[in-house]
Amino acid sequence: MRLVISVGESSGDYLAAHLVKQLKNAHPTIEIAGIAGPLMVEQGVSDWFDMNELNVMGLQEVITHLPRLMRLRKNFRQRILDWQPDAFIGVDAPDFNLGLARSLRKHGVLSFHYVSPSIWAWRARRAAKIARSIDGLLTLFPFEPPLYAPYGLKTQCVGHPLADDIEHALQKEDKDLSDDTKSIALLPGSRSGEIERHMTLLLDTASKIQQTKPQAHWVMPVVSVAQQAQINSRWGQQLNHLNIRLVPGETQSVLLDADLAITASGTVTLEAFLLGCPQVVYYRLAPTTHWLATKLNLVKSQWVSLPNILTQTECVPEYIQQDATPEAISEAALGWLNSPERIQNYRGLAKQMRETLRAGDHAARTIIEWIQSA
Image 1 (cartoon, rainbow, N blue to C red):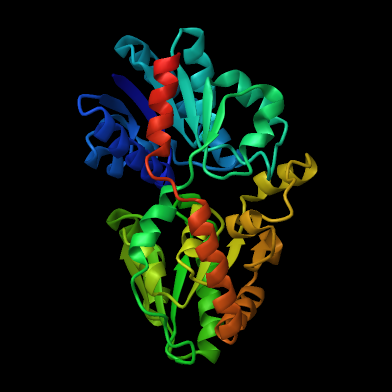
Image 2: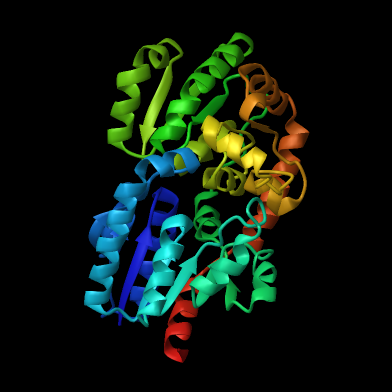
């Protein structure tokens, strides 16, 4: 069996690496290649292209990189067709992977997508086009398959590997919530554009909180040593002044130890939630992207963070675009730190969600069944 997998960022690399591991357990001789990240390469995937070539987000950023991305997709498609795999699996990165899947299907390549685009949050009309682009969709969350039912797309909820991994990680004792020495994690996002837009906001927020919690310990998990060096070269002086420690490649352990996280909206909000780490969620889009999304009425969801969407309650505070200010975020952060009962309730919700999202080898079994029945 031969499979091609395509990912575009670290969260997709994480999901794909879990999928690859389970696929190899079921089919030890399977061959897998594609656009890969470091976790996939560790699992034996041949990296035809590096995932960082796709790591752009937002209308403004994608337009800037569009000629390069189109060339990459053309070269990648030809390599797939030459290799003649049993199936193509796009993992997230929908703007790149779904168009590629649509083209490959015209050449007879079975094509699946892993992770539903956020049609429940914005651009809901994409569902029909997604259904025409692929042969099957694996979703992370149980509320997603019914959204595709009207379009006849074969869809299966397979859970989230984070829920399984975090169950194994949660062996520590509860922290003393009355302790004034708090550990606070600052998460600017994994993409360079997110870091550029968010770093000053986080530094100013940390400075405000420090006035009330001078003994707080500050930690900023980053994706890699290379990203650590880039951040230090630009903001190293301010980071040193606030005693903020950069930690590469250890996001889960940082969140496990943290009393509070201030998180850019994205998959990391789910990770913090499943770990039971209280959080304040924020995000700033590129100005052009935000203007277009607003003018075209693309945003449909009441919330942007996964904890709130999954629980259908505002269990974590959210501050988006102009509402994301140091004053608002620091006030919300201190609200968490001063509310032990609220934290315990939040951890109860997190435990329930871990049970709901347990994944096991469901994704791999589904892929194999779909290939064999095609």
